[in-house]
Amino acid sequence: MQAQMLAPAAVLVVWTIIVLFWIIPPRFGSLAKVQDKSKLGKKGVRGSDLEGVIPDKANWPAHNHTHLHEQPTLFYAVSAILAIVGAGAIDIMLAWGYVALRIAHSLWQILVNKIPVRFMLFLASTIVLAVLAVRAVIATAFADPSIAPQ
Image (cartoon, rainbow, N blue to C red):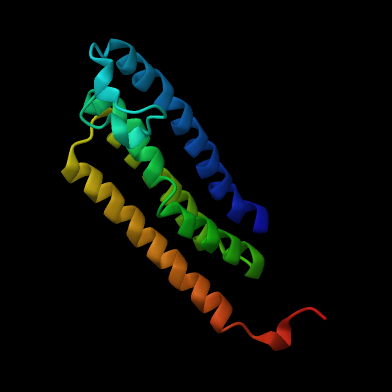
């Protein structure tokens, strides 16, 4: 079941790359429309420098991409731990649930970005991640070393 436990993590990595590429069209399209280039400030403008300069909606994919590098890093660690110690069917189901919730969160934030729904998606994914984390602690802290292969 190791591969099955790692599959949701692999899908979330691919999703993160998709969101990375999703940043390009709205940002570059919006930058091309900026009349007063002095608003861009110095050379080497960073993404955060574009806040208030281009439309908020053009920044939403970048905001979500940042979010995909925050909490999901814990998911990757938990997925690896459970894959190493031996994930159960419930762990795999929870991992897919987490990924589905994170993708739904991404789509909502990028396309609609209404906070109440976005928060509920975030909260649900956080609860699933917490359950997975507790299961990883139980699987490791209470593992029986006498049954480990020699």
